[in-house]
Image 1 (spheres, one colour):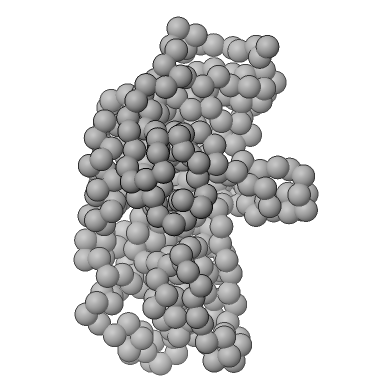
Image 2 (cartoon, rainbow, N blue to C red; image 1 turned 180 degrees about the vertical axis):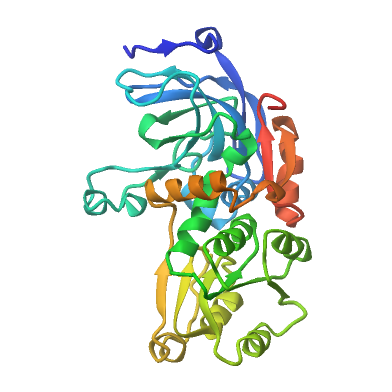
Length: 362
């Protein structure tokens, strides 16, 4: 039987919790009472203070083809969060009760070739919380101790909850040397918006934000974009040619997943430049490899997750130094019971990050 160390609050008396459950293979989710999870060896129980909605959660909520092929209801979903450690499972060593933490959401095997090389972010057997395991749209969540990052005591819970997606932005931008270079962020969803600020903080000479959503293009300006291009009304490639004297963009970060935008990313990049791809197109995308990659000598990098835990250190440094301010990105903070409103905002693109609070205002 697992021995638990309990303090902070008497969780042994708490048997159930409110959680957002993907109950059926179809649209939507339900808020219901479920059992509070128990930490096993090497795991801890966390009282969730803030949890944010990701595009992946929207896919699961809408039940698109990707979700239907990947997840198995019923289960609690959600993977971005921050909270307080309230129980320690047997064998935990690093954390203490009361620590405020966020989670690296990729649970890795430590046995595959990639893990043995230290490339944990591309572990062949990765499991993602809230996708492959029980998630954090709930009052409590269990996580392996090794996956938890301790936050400063004074970090607001909402900001702490979006460090995981910020890590995606940091990983994507810093996969290239962007200092004194032109950088294009193609796709201004929340991660793309964070990438705008990261590129500026990392010394980019000029940051171009490209999207079709006027709300998010305005946010891109707030986050530090030097140029914004609404591709509904402008010829993106012509605008880039004009502003670069025909040379093209040094580093292009593709975050839209749209086939047309991906094609434009490879056309706009300069010869010898970089294209870093974080987006997940739902279908195969046709690219002119001969002319837009090979003859141009372009370096293409696929980006997944965050480097464990190098990227987390970089995220912490950007935030603590004040060089990246993500507060303007959190446009909506709602109680968990208003989840439908939060998901609708995400579906319509009329928000930055939506943060849900399972237990009221923090």
